Image (cartoon, rainbow, N blue to C red):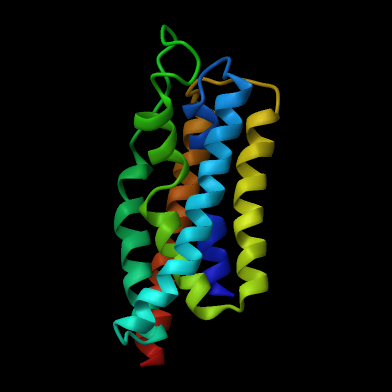
Amino acid sequence: MLAALAVLATTPVVRGRLAVGPDPDPAARSAALAALAALAVVTVVVGPALALAADVSAPTVRIASGLVIAVTSVPDLWRRPLVAEPTDPPWRAGLVPVAFPELFGPPLAAALTAAATDLPAGPTAGLVAACVLAVAVADRLPGVRTATRPLRALAGGRAAFAIAIGIALTMHGVYDI
C-alpha cells in the first residue's frame, strides 16, 4: 500500500502539464505519453529482475527507493517547474530536455520499482495506467499553462507529500529487515 502511495505521490501531474507549453502538438504529446508509459513498464519489469539478479531483498529495495524519493523531491519544494519556452515550436525544443525529466524522473522510477517489488503484476500495471492517465487528463484540462502561484504551490505540496512518503517507505524497509 505504501509503495502505491509513493507512485501516486511522485506522479508529476502539475509539472507535466506545465512542461508541455501553451499549445502542444497532439502527435508529440501522444508520443511523450507513450514514452512515459513505455519507460514505466520497463522500470516495472526490469527493476525487480535486477533486484532478484543482484540478490537484493524487498526491504532493501524499499529503503533505497524511499531514500531516492525523499532526497530527489526536496528541490521540488522550491524549484519552479520547467516550462517550455513560448518561442519554441510546440514540443520540438522542449520534448527531451523539459518534458521527459518532468514526466519520468528518479522519484517516479524509484516508486515504480518499489511497487513492482512489493505488489503483484496486476496492481502494478494499474498504477502505471493511473500515472499515464493522470498526466493525460491534467494535460487535457482547460486552464492556465504557466507557472502561476497556485500551480507552483500545488507542485510544492506534491513534493512535500512525496518526501513524507519516501521517508515512510524507508522506515518501512528498515523495520522490515
